[in-house]
Length: 266
Image 1 (tube, helix red, strand yellow):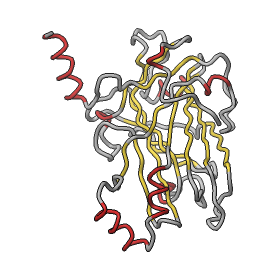
Image 2 (cartoon, rainbow, N blue to C red):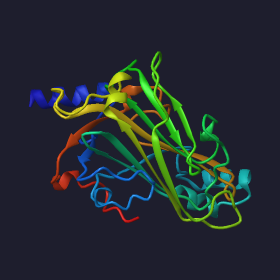
Image 3 (cartoon, one colour):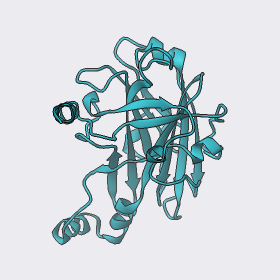
């Protein structure tokens, strides 16, 4: 009992909670990084919903009324808040693969590599070796136009990662209704280790090779809202690695508790 109480206190102090790990299953083959996510490994991956947002979803009629006064509409805002963003990870002997599935009725991405992608639509990966205060971290953003914004840890360099996106709908045509977009990226173990961001499997780390946080930005012309989604716990500001979730590698088959939110269906 005392050990369990201590573990709960430790989890609270580090910003983690029971069951908050991100599970990366071993892929049977190297995924093709094209953003389509049609490999069987992505269908059975541990998918995690980005369960926090800023602004937070309104809980009162008065808050919805504030949105109506600002945007002139509330129906589109309700739709935007209801849209889901999910992320998952896989691993192979070569490195780590990450994927995002983003529901979006208005897919917007005009910016290029190195631009401030978060001002439009983008997904974000934050990666550190440990989930603890002051830990150096990687910030990586990817847009529906396959543009990348990359900020490595201080004093480190990383090449542009291999990325791919797929759009189910239109790009930058706000008068047409879209459905979703999906994104995929690959980070090799060699680069991750050189940057101090992860340890490859077999390094005596018990399978916990890094700490991650997933986030996304959604700009909608319909609602006039720019919505930031992210994995909890912790504040929305991703510059606090103590709120990242441990990334643990497993080999198939995964247990029922590691099955994710629901089966993936591109």
